[in-house]
Image 1: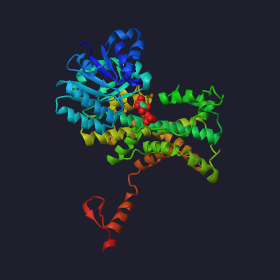
Image 2 (image 1 turned 45 degrees about the vertical axis):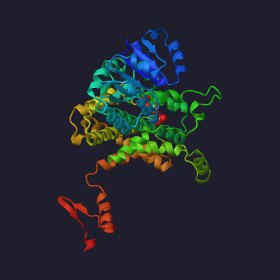
Image 3 (image 1 turned 180 degrees about the vertical axis):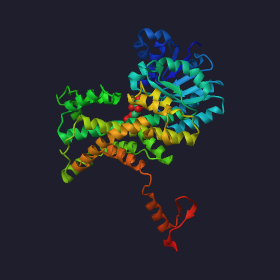
Length: 465
Ligand code: 6PG
């Protein structure tokens, strides 16, 4: 038994992580449910094969690990994970750690951690971001579970993580489901940002007749300034590709129906459960769902007419609107983390979370450095958008967001996420809102009662006298 860690699951992400660990000098036991995947994986590992120890049998794989053991499962989340836990636990000893590195629902992670704790086994839910390239050369990792597991895992994960100015983008964020929850919210922010980018593309394409090439160049230019981010970078690049088959811009031959595996939806569901509303993320999830109704939209365009033209705004206004939406999207994500930390008693360190998102992950952007600084500084009411830095930046960019949303609405272009961003911002800056009316209505029709300003207790309106 010489391997410091075992990797079960040699799909895209598992293989990449195993190779990354081997490259950093760790001895890694590897196996896969379909054992015929193992030999090709070893063959492709080249020189790194010396650090990789393949096993056909689960028992031998487990026996090949130094104790207390650390086993990383990179398999589909849900049932397969429960099945593997059942299969592997009889082979484990107290103090061993099982890690689920997939995009699991944190409720499952909490349940599994609690069940395994009864047998003195540790279960770590770990969010891994950055896709295949990230996993191979440096992902961002959001780690839950016990301090015991973190002591085992930390040195390996710090070695393989992406780094931002030398600081590894990984940390232990809290017990049980904390890591998977933070990853889920990361993905929610990812959805929001992707949707906002798509909306800006749509405005320029359908509303101002820009070519994909021109829009791509605009994003690439943004990527050289303060808006620098991975999603802006890859969108800029993708828009400038042509389809080798037809010669058309590549994006013109991609069907406009977006897939989704569940993490965005979970973020929205959890927001609602926590009494929150991450409306930018909701808008993004909803937009993906609407996108899949392509047949209906095509019939509708013939009957109702689609929007064309009407947008006379340039790159500068779009960039400012995007900046405002990005701030608000991140802010909603962090607000959600805060609500979950309260609910589940997690000691989440928001500044640190922003730091481990600065490199390796899909939502990495230059803004995350400012976010971590804001969390380390003075935050009125604990809100990111009220920090001096972000309040000022919003003040500078909100007029552009208004211009963009107004032009979109007038021109009939859908901007669900940009519109949601603005509605949230406008709601939150209103000290006296309109929920007094909701309360009056509830009391009027249902005798539900309301609180009076500055008075404790339940009151009713004169309509009941
Ligand atoms: C990441 C990504 C990654 C993946 C998700 C989201 O952080 O590396 O979020 O986990 O892209 O599966 O994908 P969907 O868009 O399919 O929900």
